[in-house]
Length: 102
Image (cartoon, rainbow, N blue to C red; front, side):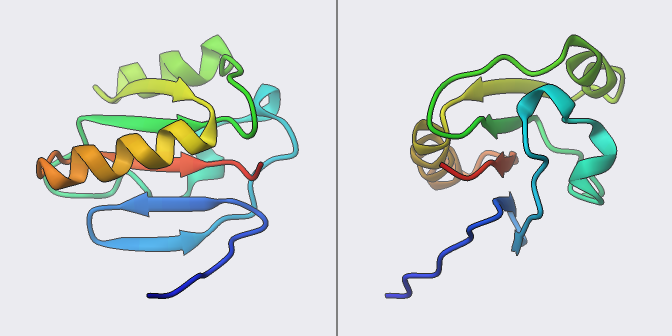
């Protein structure tokens, strides 16, 4: 088992995991900060957004931008998002995740 640490955050897709230089605050999050995370075929069902040590709501503009791409957003603290990722991927759900550091 590997115990990799991603101090700046982590981006997950069904095909890869990447270290992420996450924004300092959820409040400044925009779609561009996620790079090519959504460039998958088929398109992801939704984004699991881990907001760090506690639950913070993402900016409405961020949520609207993803909804315009037909991608939903589920925000939760990063620990809960990591657990949800494991459950959803075990069910073979096509989701992506952006986990801000704790």
